[in-house]
Image 1 (cartoon, rainbow, N blue to C red):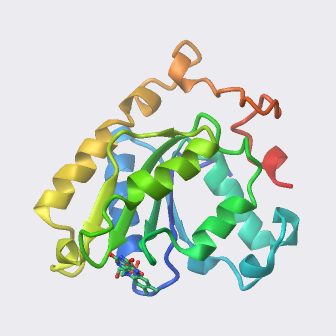
Image 2: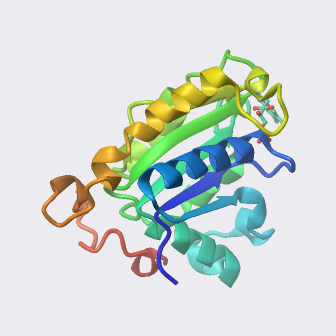
Amino acid sequence: MANPGIAGLSGSYSSPSRTRILVEEIVRRASERYQRSAEVFDIGEFGADLGSARRLSDLTGSSRQIIERLVGAEALVVASPVYKGSYTGLFKHLFDLLDPSALAGKPILLAATGGGDRHALVIEHQLRPLFGFFEARTLATGVYASERDFADPGSVSPALAERLDRAIGQLAPYLAASSPENPLSKPIRPLNGAGSNVHSGSSLLR
Ligand SMILES: Cc1cc2nc3c(=O)[nH]c(=O)nc-3n(C[C@H](O)[C@H](O)[C@H](O)COP(=O)(O)O)c2cc1C
């Protein structure tokens, strides 16, 4: 199966989940705009083995497949609900299992949901540094949504829609011109000296 164009990951294991709704909305809009295939996953889809896994090989086959889909995507939308001022613990644990080079050069749109606006900087203070570690290309605009953005069940507020369209527009240099001539479409060789095929999911799963 071909790798997804745009893949989304929600760090919430609630159902229903505002974070999942937000990720689905962003991925849907982005896939329409750039004519890419789309897939969305959430932490709840990983088995109970995620919490106790010390390395990727400890995960079940279906959990490893989700990670391969995420690592292999052209671009990612990554979001977490705010828990105690940060991302959820299982969300971080999932990324702790990845090879440091797994996301190098990957365009990533960061998003988060919280109860109010007090922790809107979770994107800048928590999510962006995490993906900086992975040498990913996080988009300048992050999307934070609070409970009032979901007042109408099943849809997002106009103010939020405007912000997420601005963020989605920043994927253009990566998705509108995915060609070998475009330097932005080439994978970055990570500083830690890992393998050069940084967009190939399976070789990074260990
Ligand atoms: C354990 C826990 C901790 C939370 N901590 C915060 C917090 O520090 N700041 C905040 O704004 N909201 C906090 N919330 C509210 C959630 O971030 C918010 O309801 C979120 O949109 C839930 O997303 P979900 O529906 O995808 O699970 C917390 C919720 C839970 C369950």
